[in-house]
Image 1: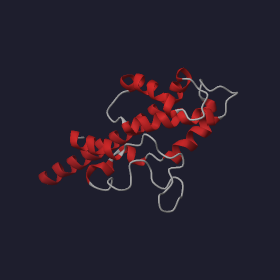
Image 2 (image 1 turned 135 degrees about the vertical axis):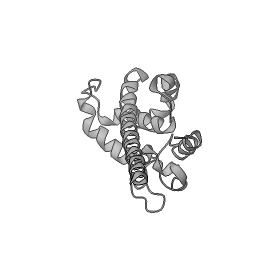
Image 3 (image 1 turned 30 degrees about the vertical axis):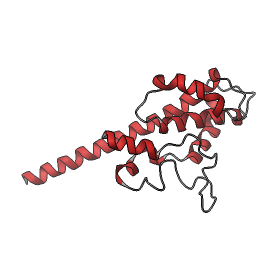
Image 4 (image 1 turned 90 degrees about the vertical axis):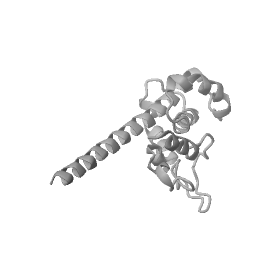
Length: 165
């Protein structure tokens, strides 16, 4: 991916303060526009970004269904306490394209107070959930890069075969 493409993706995916439901601005339907789609994402390579498929409603549902299985989950706390940390993790990962968790953790810690909502979690606990969500997106992006690279290799191989045939 070129630097220009990364810059376009970063601008398109700037989703620091997405609405919890990610409601469509016209219909009001929740989850109507995955982060990274909509105006501007249709042009160029920005629409091919792996984060295009990031749907906050889907992420929220995943973590709601799975947070209790995580080793850091406190059984006395509801999902509502963890939700801001998960959202902070997945939104930060899409916003901070090309950066590693260990590079941004201190910045995220400083930003937690503004992003914690009603959560009672301090950063020590919230960072575990935020990192979990960050890594889930990271794995998805890596998988999508692998698929795209395999497709390119297949297409390049098909082109070479056709040139020889």
